Length: 268
Image 1 (cartoon, rainbow, N blue to C red):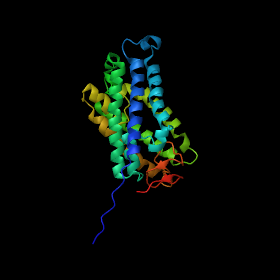
Image 2 (cartoon, helix red, strand yellow):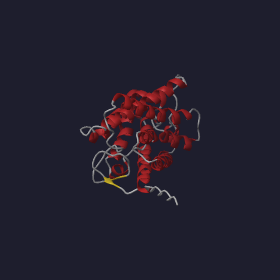
Image 3 (cartoon, rainbow, N blue to C red):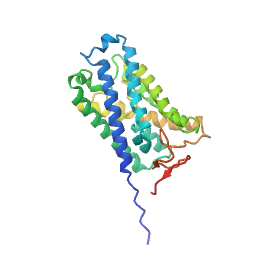
Image 4 (spheres, one colour):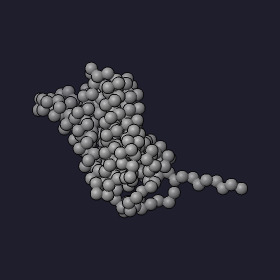
């Protein structure tokens, strides 16, 4: 008589951490968008240069994600807070499929919570910037916006893999992502809104209930993440991705597969 396969353990704590991290990132990041670009708040007078405000917004937005990565919650879940990143780690063989589903569900729910909190706190100021929605920039064809999102996400995931495959660099991954994403927001926000993250786009679109062109933010960033997996295999075939955490700490539990650095493994 064939034995039944053991059921996979669902790691609710990690999923909840991803939800909290995404909610924090969305609320803080979109609050920066509202404060820097919202009508009636005066930033356009204090900092007239829109490019400088995009850079400031990017530093705050990506900084909140990096802060979460080094927090206790981020150390537990790995601080993906982005389905594109989780999908890439899964494609690299670092995640179980059920954990990938749990992470993405947590990230999407966190995005909705963060966007709802934004509406509650900022009200009509948030409405004046479409609740921080990612939208194609005026004058840019959709194929160009799609390509921008794909290439930026590819670059981000490739950089993450490069850092977490190096014992010398891996501890600096949150600093790297802070600077890289801030630069992408600075340069890419006028083109595409710099999503890089389907969950980041979903929450504001839901509260605004506006879906025009939102499909590309669900296709381009994940596709960019998957292309980064293939490109990294070609460019650095000899290097192992050591961990699926953006800030790996050995004495924190780790639910991921094929981890090549000290960690507290959980029984599956």
